[in-house]
Image: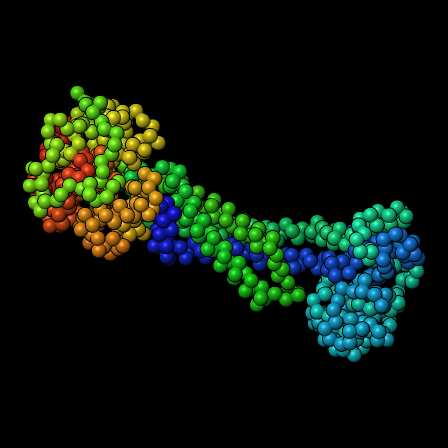
Length: 375
Length: 265
Ligand SMILES: Nc1ncnc2c1ncn2[C@@H]1O[C@H](COP(=O)(O)OP(=O)(O)OP(=O)(O)O)[C@@H](O)[C@H]1O
Ligand SMILES: [Mg+2]
């Protein structure tokens, strides 16, 4: 019956119900979009690792972020290859350089050099141009989403990178760096040319383990044999790269603060609506009390109304968030949703709505049933 | 002296069983009243209030609204409470209805010392023993007539389905069978007060309290409500207190008490 009263009185006052719903929907959409943008952005910090097809990353023992490697001797690769459980190991170079633009200017780029004939480190999928684009002499692969920065390179466009000729032989989609510098994929040897530096040194070794082998055990063995390197699973290195940016930039804090502020606005809207609804029918609460409703039942009634508003609002809010992502998400500003984000936003907003029913309850608690007999 | 030993445990049948428990209705309420059983000296005393005092401090000075009121009602008896405006009628009704605490005095209600109960216990006493009718109906706007009447039953723990069934039955008794699914805003004041009346008696309360039940109604509707009230009381055998200014309905009283200067005359 309590549910019946809660439900019917709530839906009786459609205008206020709508206002409350708007508050909830606003909160849900805000948390989802903010969260989605955050995860979409932070994912770029570990994109090269996530898409590398490697089980283990080996780098200098001080490595902390995939985009900022420290040189290690390339010849150490042989020691890694001889370790039991290693199926394949390849070096990978990451280095800064500059690419010339048609207007005579330059743009900083991140050169990623990969060994031919392997998919280790190949984080891109060709969208324009031949599949084996790097087989082209002087070939490089750039991302469609960096077109503006690189001044619209076409397949076959010629550029200069670090005083060497480069031909755009393939384009990928959505492989973007967390930094503003575009990734330029090329072969290992060409990357040495493009970025200069010591050809006997490299940035990372990427390792694929044999099926069924525990990557952690292989990591330990690599660290044991090579003093000056750090070996970690791809998941570990991805987390490390993300944490690097989170802690260095305060990104989590600023996104978190914006989200919290939005939630606060949502909370106030819901609380205010419920409060206005209750003020409107304060004599009904006095009547319920006179007829013998316990305090707990009144609280339950308000809680039930909040929950109803919350649940309907959360469902609509999530649907709206999905629509917004569908319409507006791009690789540059990617909105990345996950079950965790949906569940998290739902739980937070639900709890907030329950808390919001506290405000009207404070008012209702003071209602004296005797008051209805006073005219 | 009170007669508290004479309290039966079982509630009256109205609402709890099929409509067969209702007494036959007469066309003339006054005739029905004169033939009603039990208005004898053997009637059970439902409420006794002894030496009740209630005052408000205004500017540090205590002003007594009720100053030593003795009052009682028996089962099946309908007592009218009248007096000038501001004389304390509603205050007394609130006190015997366990909505307000008196400053002094004893209240014996349905075998309990109501003045010694805590808030939760008084709430329970109200829910199980008292029905209320208010001047302005106090129906819940979002609920249909049927669901409004079902509220007290639900509070007593009946299932919604059961409560609705009983509510529908009693709405038929007050002539609103066709209106049972309408909202209060879709009914006339007279109909609303009949719904409120149905709500007050649906759980067969030991004590029925009405504060100016006809004040918001026109003459005809007021009369009809009082006729219905008397009819329903026959079935529930509730002790009834009606606060009213309205001389047109005094014929419905078994006894009329008047408050003046904080005391009953
Ligand atoms: N909370 C309060 N504080 C101070 N005085 C109060 C309070 N409540 C009631 N009173 C006073 O108590 C007196 C009795 O009030 P009550 O409502 O019982 O009168 P009443 O007989 O029902 O009047 P009416 O016929 O106008 O309804 C009034 O003088 C009123 O001013
Ligand atoms: Mg009054």
